Image (cartoon, rainbow, N blue to C red):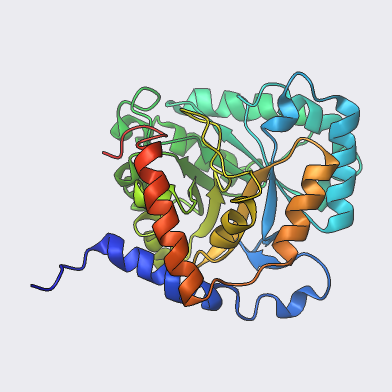
Amino acid sequence: MAKEITRRDLGKAALATGAIAAVAGSKAGAADGLERRQLGKTGIEVSVFGIGTGSLGAPEVTQEEVNRVIDRAVDLGVNYLDTAPIYRQAERRLGPALQGKRDKFVLVTKVEATSKQDAIWQVQESLQKMQTDYLDLVHIHNVGRTDRFPSLDILLGADGALEGLMELKEQGIVRHVGMTCHLRPKRALTLLSTGKIEAVMCAANYVDVHTYDFEGTVFAAAREQGIGIVAMKVLGGVEGTGAKLSGKEHYEKAVRYALGIPGLSVAIMGVKNVAELDQAVATVKAYEPFDRSEQMQLTELGAGMAKDWGELRGPVV
């Protein structure tokens, strides 16, 4: 009997056959610099690689090192900075580092509030820390968490956080509104259905796809709506057991996988110094799509690793 083809199978097939289409044409205008892509329908052009600033907030990282990373990012053509209030000192360190360079970057942060007023307060605090008067994109952070957002009805209601971000957008303080999701993909689909989300960032790597499959669900829906697609946890992230794809065996494969996601706007990777930034940019610039044989091998590798990782980021449903 023929095997039933599921939506997940279709999602994975799209990754296997659509990687070339995902980047065709977009490299043409990049010359020798870092490729730029459109962030959905926002009108913003973003570097295909973006800096995740979680590591820059760590106690052992100095302000001077953050300054060097930001200066080097300008030189390399990296214009996307992803941060959050919970990234320890990251927002506070970005403030001084961005002085005189704010217009060089698409600056992105997050809120973890349920109510409108708390979301507005969190944005105001982030503005103060980063010494800026506007943010290019603000995400509702990890909508899959039921402890943080027990009721999506409240989050999306008249007094909810989404409405607070929409008010800030009307004022020009927040230019665009998005969301992130690490687990429970169906919850992200609920937010996409509002028509108010302009960018979505989800965990996406060749291991997690076998467990959460944001690629075949949330990203597929985002493509249909012209919503900007941002990949995070590209190198596996640090949640749960701390499983990562940063070692020599996995690093290049992980980057190539992310860049081949159909419709991808930007892939986020954390760096804590200039050396790590240089490595990331060099790997991104050397990108080549997987051929069919490589894709089959990667699928087999990822499926095996997924059995060990399990629900690393939390429940799927």
